[in-house]
Image (cartoon, rainbow, N blue to C red):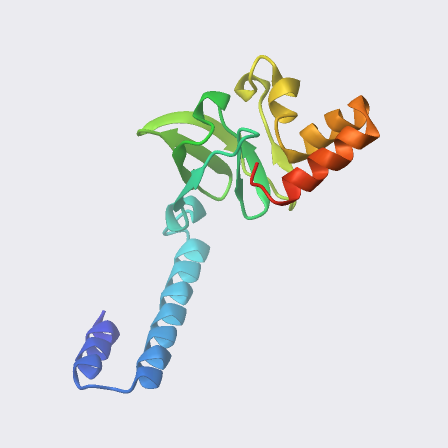
Length: 158
């Protein structure tokens, strides 16, 4: 605490930006070391140290992505902004301060943590309502239609 006060006093003396950045980096490292020692000594559990709170917009495929891992969200929240609390072991998703989803935290990049109850009743129809799905349907109908649709989609946002 004393070192932080010293840092604030130095900042008030018009230090250079570079020097301020060095001081802040030093204090961040000091805080990390204190947290690490606190966990090792058993004074704090890891979950108490690192909950991360952030917000995401639910995608059309009723998922959010955090650190390259996808987590499902109830489909009724597609396009809505949700709050997410990430701890060491779990991901909790909230909408208007109500928990709407809970997942065990994924460990592998690009993996999916999903629950069947989050999917809409006509899951395939919803998934096909995107650029790739529409192009696949156009190919089924005919090559000429597919080329025409592809040209239109290159210049538009879907």
